[in-house]
Length: 365
Length: 207
Image (cartoon, rainbow over all chains, first blue to last red; front, side):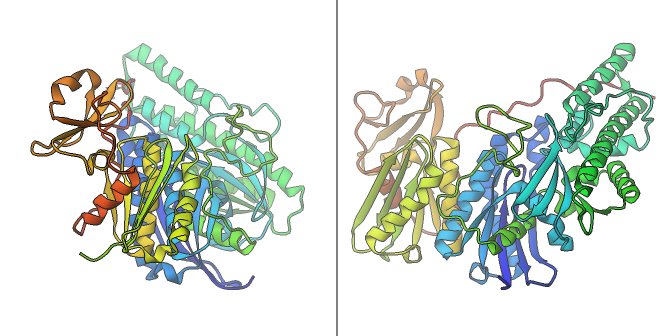
């Protein structure tokens, strides 16, 4: 198929309510005509994390406004579009359902085709939206909810090399901030403190570094931080600003060490495929961390691999990536009907062994 | 009043309910009981009803949706679909609460009392001394429910049966409302059940 396509994208799987319009003319760079992201940080701030019911309530009442804003921003009407792409999972089911049902209503009333998109595929295909890169490439998805290495072999062919077996690093940054009385989201706050801290003062573990493979674990790191903090409190009755900086620096260095070493191993496996233009791309909010980014850049330099970090607004949750993934899947013939189901659990690599949530309901992501 | 073509639906409990009011006075009703799967079933059900009436989504002049109180996720399924339909069709979507719908067509003064689970009820009085809907402990109800007429699944043996199928009541109420109306929003009556973190941040020492 070589026709120009313009898609609406809808995303509501976590705590960002988003809609976007993306156009792609074959042979040309994709164009983001509008991208609206309404964050919910303030709604969840008092709770020290995303509360699923609060998120779902906000999505249900804000999504249609975001769609209107995206269409207005693109100066298009629904009838000017070629299709609607919507995140159908994995994620917080209340939010995903709101998006899927909005999309079904829009599709039924407009007659536009609908494509359900895996949220992780949205992240994984972003390097093709921003830089039109070729398959296969290696992707490190590292965010508040996810952490995994994927070899993107094609639009619907992802091989997961490994990932976290418990918490995602973004979640660990948030919890660290919470334990140290820093604001949410934790990533920027912890990074700012760490910049003035001594990473060597506190000894933090590097979980699973001694094991082969690309799997990671971050929940033990969070516990280690709690213990180190409590040891300081036991000694002094509280923590000083410098204690906090040093704790942040030590924690951040441990996360960066783990990600860098596991990335090296993932790159080795990826390079064994002899990709013609080797590339490591990152996605997810944690990719904004400057220490992690510089470690990955240095690693790629050493290994002769191009390093690609899309603009932060396209690394964190957004609907442009969903519209784009919809366009890519639509070109391969993907269509969903009005029975499209919202899926809380939906691993991108269906063949890989589950890492998280491997109970009777299957792998989460 | 211009004859309206109103599509109404509700998934606030263990069902998919839908009704279609046509300008010639015909009314179509559908009710399918289901504990889950409303999100997958709702749109095909609506399409089947439109097919039966020989019209399409483009012929609708109003969308009406049940906003609860009820199952949070169920309410959002219908509200999100209603907003999507309204946005694409350029017609208004109107929200009608479950309590308003149950009261529709019944004699006043009337108290609607619905089971809210966890030992609580949703209660609203309609008529001369009308009240806003509220969430009450079930034990408080006898003192409150003094109207001659009662309805609802927690109203006891004297409860009147509903005058109309739920979705048809939603459709008729929405058809009679003057415009403009706010977009339909879930009517929760209950908070999100989220508690602030219990562990306080550490004391920050000077120096």
